[in-house]
Each structure stands twice: as structure tokens, then as C-alpha cells.
Image 1 (cartoon, rainbow, N blue to C red):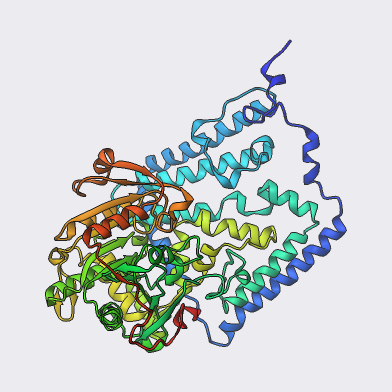
Image 2 (spheres, helix red, strand yellow):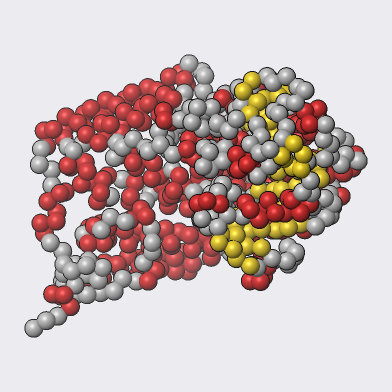
Length: 614
């Protein structure tokens, strides 16, 4: 007689295909060697602890962990208050969770008996953390996987269904629950991750020895903080195999260097191109290598490209605020371009917070009658922060006051703090996989230029960062025409030059909905374009790769979803579309310019400012 019990060998519908011999990789065969390696791993853990303690004992570092933990506890306690204030609600929540566990247990028993039982749809998900087949085939790990999904879903629903929470508290609570869920995933622990368990048994714990050694090295490299390695940094050198487009540093201020790139065409567009990158990261994300470089591509299209390379600030820059960055950064670069090319009219690009600064500077220029920038392109830039996404979790009066108090001691925000905040936005992709691979598997990360750039963090001047958080994220003053620069209120409605506003569909830093909304703040014509992928890959997308797509359509009015329904989808990169847009504004060309022109170059690109590490 044939039945489902005999036929199901996939493990997806039951355990009838479970082979007892499959547990052999989980059985320790050399306990003596394992014990020795565990002792060695503990020794390396001691070195990691020493690396963590040394700067604290010397008074060089003071922990501020209590502050975010306190905010998390305070936030989640408001959720707990709702569910615990009414015994019926408490019972309902507990019953729902325990009922889900009972369902898992019942299904597991049925599968152990050989019955084919379909998994609940709520537990069927494409999650890279649980790709190993034993997460489903092995009864022990299958139960743990299902229990994790049920518990994390239940916790998220507790936040979603709690009544009486203001929007900001609910947003923070949901974010904190996701962080806790990511940290407590069974994939992050040796005894609950089948792949880690097998590898530890197979190597008799040698993976843990190597992993703890890497942990000690990474804490030492971070001078008492864990500097999580995401790539093999030894394979990259700025100016040698990354950021190598030929050019010269032709001017320098306290807060930036201005780079002009060598022409690669016989003629160039009459209007030079100024790129204002974010100072939260370094500019060379747009010049990773010749195949990915937007800068090189723009040069090859006939642009005379100038880039602002921001200083990696220290205590000397503590009082440099947004006006300083507008004057000594954007304004200084415009003066330099005019001296180098004798051209007043410029096309400008701003990326992320560099775009927000550029937009604010344009509003200031409009108020002052400065018309040198004739078109603006914004890459993943927010000017209206109503829908600013998960970064708003870190912004409220209490948190900003604590941050300002900490910055006042040094004059800047440590680069690692901002890097951690960005990584937390995608912890399941940018933190825990590297924790597992590095410290539990003991594997060296592969070289990847984008992750090298991501690890090359920068500090933020205290005055600049405080102004940005309060005026943009907290009070949304730029969009509301209330931002004060140079002693006067500035309005984006006064900016009437053409704007090319690029958003990316999967952006977790500058959400597409937020970028789209900001289009309505400008007083001139805005061309809104939506690119596939995210904050980096959606921007750094060379045409010859043939990746992703972009959408174009009518004026950015109404909401993004409605606009997208009528938009035209085009396969590939948006870069050629942008080039056509620029040339339609002014396609006049002149003989190619020599980098620096009448100015004496200070040094070869990429310059010295970009080489300073935090």
C-alpha cells in the first residue's frame, strides 16, 4: 500500500523522509580536540575583552550604551502597559502565542509520525538566514525555525495592535522589536544553527578559535569598539585601485578639497558639472572603479567634472555649521570653478545629505540673487522629511539632547556611531550575517569595493550634525520655509531652476515616498525619476551592466503610487536619460579644458582629505 508517508522525501511536508543517519554530522567525534579548541577560543575571547577594557581603564573611552538601552526600555514599556493594563488583553495575547506554539508542536508530532502536513502559509517565507535544508528536514531545527517566526511575528503584532501610542513611539517600538528579533535569531547561535553546529563539529571548534581571534582584532582596530569587518580591506587602497579617475586637487578650504577631473573628450559641455556628495560618507562611492564610476562616465560624456571632497572633521571643526558648509563648501567650489574655467553657469549634483545641503544652498542663493547654478540634480535626496523612514527613530528631543551633550565633549560625532545607525536599518543583512561568518564560522570576508567604502566612515562636526537633525528630521524646516541660513529664512519655493529628482525604489535611507513628496517644494519644473534597487545600487548603475530599470512620467503630483501606475518603465540605467536631460538644457560645447586651468594644482586626485580615516 502506498501512502504519503512513504512518498514524501523532501522534508517540506513532513519528516517521513528524515534519515537517522543525517544526524551523524552533529555528533562530536573528537571530544578531546574540541575541548582544546574551546579553551583556545576562550583565550582569544579574553584578548577581545582586554581590547575592549583597555581604553576604558585608561579613560580614553566612555560607554554610552545605557542611553539607547534606556530609550528602548522606555519605548517598549509603553507597549507593555497597553497589554498588561487589562487582564483580558493580557490573556488574549498569551493565548494567541501559546496557541501558535501548540500548532507547531502538533504539526511536528504528526510529521514525526510520518504524516504529510502542510506548513502554515505564515511560516513560508524566503529568508536567506534559513537557507540550509536542515532548517526544514531536521525536526529539531524545524521546530526552532517555526517557533522563531511565530514569536517574532507575535512581538511585531503586539506593537502594531497596541492602542493609544503616538506615531513616533509606535515607529520606535516597531524598530526596536525588529532589532531584538534580528539579534535573537536562532541563525546567530551555534547550537541552534544547523550549519554552524555541523561546522563546529567537523572542525572540532577550530572555526571558533579563528572567529574569536578575528573578534579580538576587530575590537582592537576599533580602539575598544567592535569594528565589524564586512570586507577584506587589505585588498583596497585609495588612489591605487579605488578612486582612480585622473584629476587634480585645485583648491582647498578648512572643510573641503575641490577636485577637477581630466577631460577624456576633445570637446566638453560649456557648463561645468559640480558634484556635492554627502559628508556622512566619502565621495568615492561615485568613483569606486573605472567600470562603476559615475564620475568617469560623466567625464566620458563630455562634462568638466568638479567634486567636493569633504574633510574628515575633528575637534577643530566643531563649530562648522550648515552655513559654513554652504559657504566654504558649495560656494567655495563655485568660486573655484569660475576661476578655473571662466564659466559662471554650472550644473550641480547633490547626493543624499549632500543634495539636501545643495537644495538649502540654492534657496539661500535665490534669496541673495546668486544664479550661478543653472540646474540641479538630486540623487536620493530628502528635502521634506515627513516620511523620512527608520532614521527618524533616532530623532526626538531627548535623543538629540543626549547626542549634543556627547558631541560637546569632542566637537564631533564618531564615524562609527553613524555607521552603526545605518547598518541597523538593515541589521539582518549588514550586521548579523557578518557576525556569523566572521566570529562563528571563522571565515575571512571577501573583498568588495562597495563594502570597503561603507566601512570608511567619517566623523560629523557637532554644529553641523545638530543643525541637520533639528532643522530637517525633527522640525522639517527646509520644506516648510522656516530654515534660517545667514540670518534669513530660505524657501525652496524660490528655487526655480530645472531639477532632476532621482529616487530609488528600495531605498531605506531616503525612501522614495519621501523624495517624491519633496519634489513639490521647489518653485520650478521638477523631473522625477524612480530607479530600481536601493540607495547605492540604484544610483551607481552603469549602463553597460544592463541592470535594474527606471520609471519616468508626468509631473510629480499627488502620491507616488498613483504616479507610478501611469509611469513608463525603461530597462537598464537612468544615466543616459539624465545625460539627455542635461543636454536639452544646454548642449553648447567648447574645447576640452585642462584640469586646474590657470590655478596651480595642490596634489593629484583623489587628494589627501579623502584618505583620512576615522
